[in-house]
Amino acid sequence: MNSFFRMVPVMLAGLLLLGAARPEGAPSLSPYRHYDTNVFIHGNFRPAFQKQWKVSAEFLKNPPSVMLPLSVSSFRTVTGPVMPKRLTESVKSLGPEERQGLEGALTQLLKSYEQTLEQQDETLLKNNLAGAFSSFFASSFYVLKNGQELTSVQRQSMLQQINAAIGMGLKDRRMSDRDKQELYESVVLSGHIILGLYNEGRDKGRPELMRESRELAKELLDEMMGTRIEKVHAEDDGVWLEE
Image (tube, rainbow, N blue to C red; front, side, top):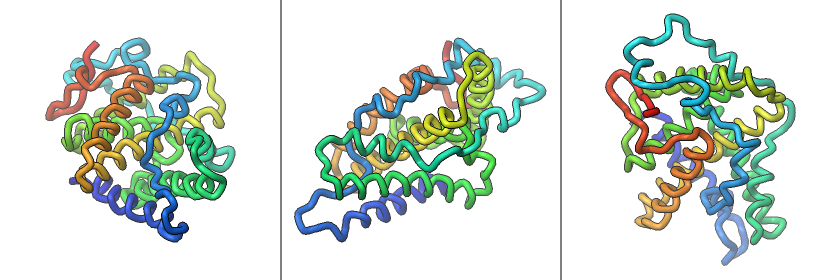
């Protein structure tokens, strides 16, 4: 199991501790709860591989001689975290203190993601849409394939394809750095919430959480990337999607 997936249970344990000091009987502030999936989707942006960049088995057989640099998917941070507050506000049952606690837990998820990038010497993926989508895709794949992980070769293949798809897509659509930041946060948080639900359900023997995680992964994979897990093919030399 790679270091990213090893760290998530540790992150989960730490975040659950944020609710440990709450009054007796108060609900947990775990960030892994049900959300309206609409709050994850910003401006209906998706890489849309089939429409914007023909990703298929041909990519693996005849990869481009020059890959687009990761900088085409990068952006400048223009404000503090936006999506933790927006996600928290979508949970209508929370009181003011609970809302504040959950917002803090979600903010910490974003920080933990970027700390993991630093530890893995992948700082180029910080504030980078391709990196966020690649992480989200790996989490969705893991959950929908019952714990099967992408290899490092497969993850790199998917990162290159996502970066190219986003680069092509941004030619046709202007997005401000703020728009990109909100999309980045949405994608990072959605991947962590999917993975956290799955791990919590598995570790605590709660199949309903694992089922919820799969349903969320399936819906967001379609909404954010325009594909279904049935169209994903992971082979030794990379990952490709059916037309």
